[in-house]
Image (cartoon, rainbow, N blue to C red; front, side, top):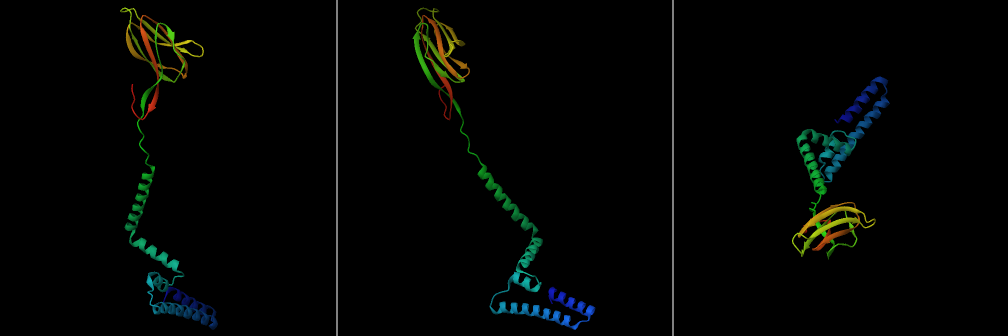
Length: 221
């Protein structure tokens, strides 16, 4: 006898003793017979069709559950109680796979190294005192210079003044040299337009202005 049929029988006996009513007892007895008959016929019909009742159907019929969903819930609860370690391993494996997938998506491309290269802005040769054309200077630029063809040893004179192309005022004197020579002078100022004022005697000279820039490939220093 299933739990539900037993419960109905208990209700019948209690109700009969309390009210001494034969009609109510008869109704409850009919309910019990109807439920038992319906379960018997359902199970017999499944067997006649050649279909196995299965685990869920067996729980449904034997344990007096109200629905198939309730049978499934009971089966899941029993599996969790019997195999807790296996369930934990499955959950841990799923979490590890999700984290590994997120790690692959979050990987950033490797940035290419940057190199400072020098690009020529302008170059001017000359003899004696002169001035260059105006040019636009960035925050960091340099002057590559050379003196040659000195008339007599020690007589040459070469001096370069950086001036504002707007006001003409002197900003810096990066080169002041006597005789022959060559070198690079670096200038760090605010971006603006400049020109070079050159004071020279007894030598030929060349000045080249270069500006700094970033590149993914190394360039000439």
